[in-house]
Length: 130
Image 1 (cartoon, rainbow, N blue to C red):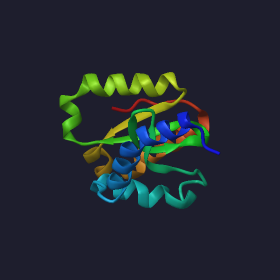
Image 2: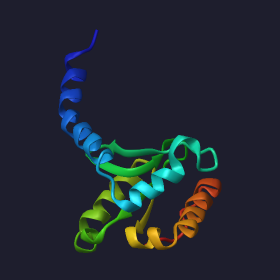
Image 3: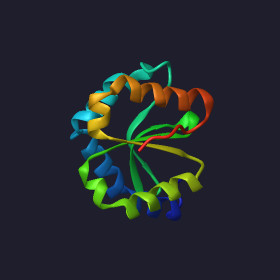
Image 4: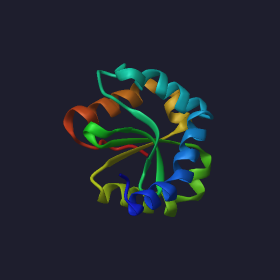
């Protein structure tokens, strides 16, 4: 039997989950390309989820097993640095490492970007990124 508290929590998260689902169906070119390399454990056997809700945020990609989040940011993020810093602090406070890359950087240098992600996964570090 589901408690009333569980029902209200699920109801509160429903719009976030619906938004995440919508975002999975409308990926950017960079997100589509990253996902083609990471889906189904195709990326060195690591399992990634895309457009995944964590708290009140939706992250682009996350490897839950290694608590690594990969964000591919478009130009709008240049105007919202404060929001991104707050969001990153929230995620880091929950034990996640966050790597951010510009969409165009990933599209121009996908192999180098994926090498950086792989290094972070294998070493537990967070190499420099944007």
